[in-house]
Image (tube, rainbow, N blue to C red; front, side):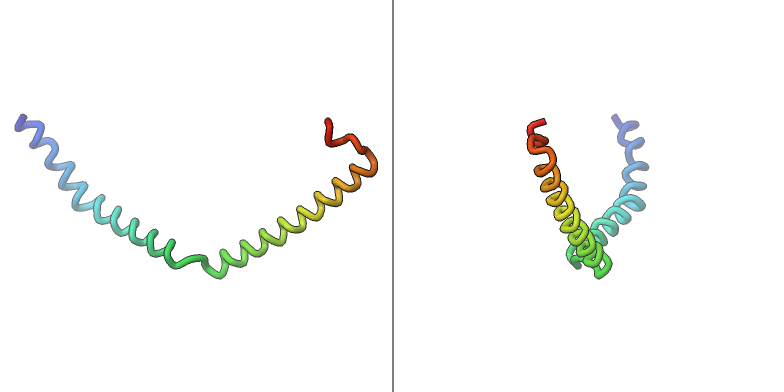
Length: 77
């Protein structure tokens, strides 16, 4: 039993000295970034995507109206 405990001491020490501090720093850095909200670039990207979505919705409505006029039963297929 003592040999198993001795074997586990080195990995635990390495974890506590190297991995745990890096893990904690990265965790709080990501938490701070989340709490800050969106950046100006991200807001601009969202606005661009919203405009593109609206344009796509209008195109789909136009295509559906054309299909309704030319092939009234296209929705049943």
